[in-house]
Amino acid sequence: MIRLITREHTLRNRSPVMFGWTGKFLHVNLNKTKAVANRYEGSIARNYLGGRGFAVKILWDELRPEIDALSPENKLVFAAGPLTGFALPSSGKMVVAAKSPLTGGYGDGNVGTLAAVQMRKAGYDAVIVEDKAKKPVVLLVQDESAEFLDGKDLWGLDSFKTEEKLREIYGKTAGILCIGQGGENLVKYANIVCQGGRAGGRPGMGAVMGSKNLKAVVFSGSHELPAADPKTMQTLGGDGYREILTKPNYPFWKRQGTMMTIEWSQENSVLPTYNYSEGVFEKAEKVGGFAMEKIKVSNRGCPQCNMTCGNIVKGSDGKEAELDYENVAMLGPNIGLGNLKQVATLNRLADEYGLDTISLGNVLGFAMEASEKGFIDRNVAWGAFKPTKDLIDDIAHRHGTWGNLLADGVWSASEKIGRDSSKWAMHVKGLEISAYNCHSTPAMALAYATCSIGAHHRDAWVISWEVKTGREGYNAEKVDKVIELQRIRGGVFESLTVCRLPWIEVGFELEWYPRFLQAATGLEMGWPLLNVIADRIFNLTRAFWVREYGKKWSSDLDVPPARWFEEPLKKGALKGSKLDRGKYNSMLQMYYRKRGWDTRGIPTRSTLKSLGLDDAARQLKRVNLSD
Ligand code: PTT
Ligand code: SF4
Image 1 (cartoon, rainbow, N blue to C red):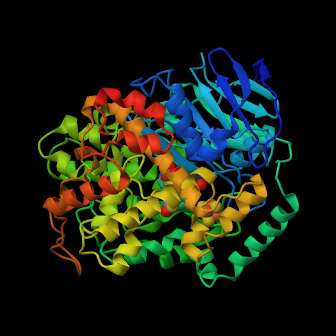
Image 2 (image 1 turned 135 degrees about the vertical axis):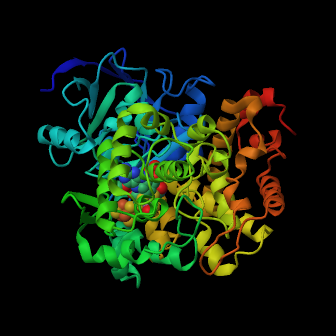
């Protein structure tokens, strides 16, 4: 039974309505059970847009450097953008961000959720959760009210049961985000789950939520979102949805969604296999998009989307699970498992516990390799379903030596196991690599290495362009492409918080977005200006990392694992391929120069100042900024 503990909420500093943005942040203190809504400066909206832009600005301004990410001092930010919640294609997304316990740097994730829509309708562009509740709580934000509900009876439940119970009370349309046992037990790659299996926050955002004793957040709003030009907004939205339906790739996308990438990765020798030692998997066909179609029962998706791409199947235990490319590649080929129903069961387990599937698949692959080499005394063979499932249970609960050690991710595990395991601990800056093997794709390796949160494909999925245009070079064209994608994807899409898949997968043109923005905000913001905003956000994110790492920062942190440089592929059409370390390092230095960074990968004073980041230039003095 859920009980009301307290209700307190104040709105400070009322000022005129902005368009597009709600113009308000809600600061919630879990220890004091207080919520305060503040109007923020219009310049913040214009300079940082929303989502990731807001999150990094808030964390930069409000966090004391070098705090423990799992201490009450960390803050958890839920941030949406100026398009979130309008009837515009694929706009039901939000960013969840905090200092990451996995990497020690900036961490965030993007999640498609009713919570994004409801938070905005409740009147907030961002909600910032501070401090730690004295006991487990559920935060309920409904328009001008914030309540702190007793979460005792939910603590210990998995994410599906938690959401089910809250939905019984708050109904179908409430926006609910919660953690499973992974977040409660501070597994460092625990994420935040919603809507029965959409998940976000790879670098441990679920663990940060658990560290605050916050089991779930419920948003429910009834306000109209303020559009500058509601009529154009309505027409444009309708046109946009119709345009997507006419795209030639649309029907196939609806059949397979991201799962079509399994076949593509296999054909191009980039499917992560046996802990990224290979790029092809002998049972790829069994876990590919066409195999998935045979067992698919329905589609599921994010709010406001007509491309619904979540493939729902039944796993080997009869439970439903959502299959996406990354989940399957990491819990299938990367751990040597070629049975799709069993992969689905592991995927469902990860969703129930609220563990990031990419990091989990990586950790499991690492454990299997360590077991094979006799580095750990736990027997977990490649593709062995039951021992794998048992190990996931142990990780989620931090049971036993190996469950506990692997709950901290591969970077930490390799430091403890020692010997040469750091060479095949597949991470960059502590974030486990997502599902593309880069033995033969230097630009994608650079994209992972310089991504804002550690090795994720979110900022620059350059691999499809690279495979098409030539893998061999380590050249300026590749560096430019990585930067271009980091701007569009990591900067603009993450800050508008709209889904990038309409653009990438069905070719919904980029020109739509400035038009959407103008209808929402009344501001004319073309792509050149949006790219400058993206650079501001990217540089502030880098500054955040450097502020946290201090003297420990070095360009070595922007280099992928040794395996890709030292152990050539042994199978497939690209047998013998590996990265060249010397050429990679030159390409990295070229990337730094084009970014306006010094040879350590730190933005120069003039780069920061040109983007209006004077405060970052001031705070980074202690690392001897170059001019
Ligand atoms: C994202 C990462 C991805 S990226 C996947 S599958 W992918 C994994 N999904 C997980 C899952 O599921 N359960 C789980 N327990 N952990 C998971 N971890 C992994 O998280 C997702 C889609 C997908 S499916 C992709 S590519 C696109 N990502 C977008 C993005 O990052 N930004 C953006 N503006 N649009 C995007 N559109 C697409 O969204 P993280 P979702 Mg995600 C079951 O979480 O931390 O960002 O990492 O959010 O709502 O599920 O949509 O082949
Ligand atoms: Fe969500 Fe898929 Fe639609 Fe993107 S395309 S908004 S991930 S359902």
